Length: 396
Image 1: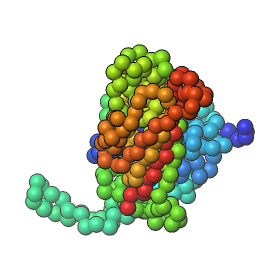
Image 2: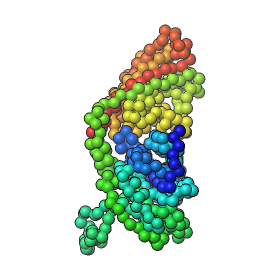
Image 3: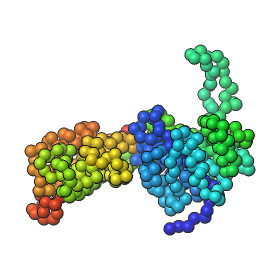
Image 4: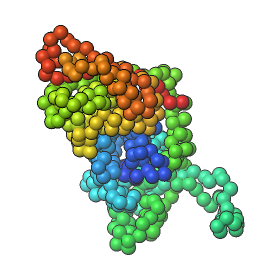
């Protein structure tokens, strides 16, 4: 383990929003831009900046996923990072982050994970600019012509020279920010950002230049913009099809009848497992996630996710297809082979392939079965062994 100096600056990464307008099927920060989530991209920028304490504020129920993303981005700085649970509002989430700060911290940056492409240089610049008693925000000039309206009627113009578009991270002296938060809580007032809350407590706020890359991902169009920018930075190889391999093994001994390859096999002994034990579906999930660089089945469907207890293949595969789509991948095809003495599979092969393909949104699926001439645990009838290979294609 690398020992790092105790930092005096902390950054609170707010990632607890629901992302309703983004319509990503998951909390906003966990929606994929490419093979990485919005949160992971934001943290890549944070950990590319100077060493500081990093507090990630995660949506309730998704702390484990946020912890995985944080540790993957942190690398040798993992000891500087932690995850806390967010509140019902942004203000409550930042307050949860403030409560997790170390005693030595005297400068606090507050950063929206939704500004996922914020350059590390902007994070460092904000930290440098925080002075005694003053807050700092990065901001861009407003370039559009602005109008005051009354319903559908234009009632006047706005002098844009007096306006700026605020970004994050916003930086503050710690004690003054904590006092401002206590005052806002006592007054029961919610503010749109931390600079407004800080200014309402009577503290000055200054600005530095922001970055065009620090835009906020709020709508599907914003997400496409981020994907476009990242695609332009990738080497040509990143646009090539990708292949993943998945394996799974389950022993016989579960309750009820067998579920295998998405089909119910009445009268056949069930496989043991957290869900229905469908080793064919599970190997497919691992192969698809591996091809897209999205971790493994344990990350997304393991025992930490009780909602998948007893779930069948269609649930796993539909959610996996959604994860890949969010990360910018189309499914090309999946090929699976399982080793077992039973059930007798050939008569239901076409049915299984149709069910599995439908769960993946129509992607071709091929399933074959073989025996091992009595060799190994599969040959002795103790369980099923499966290998799957998946082809995925970066979406254009």
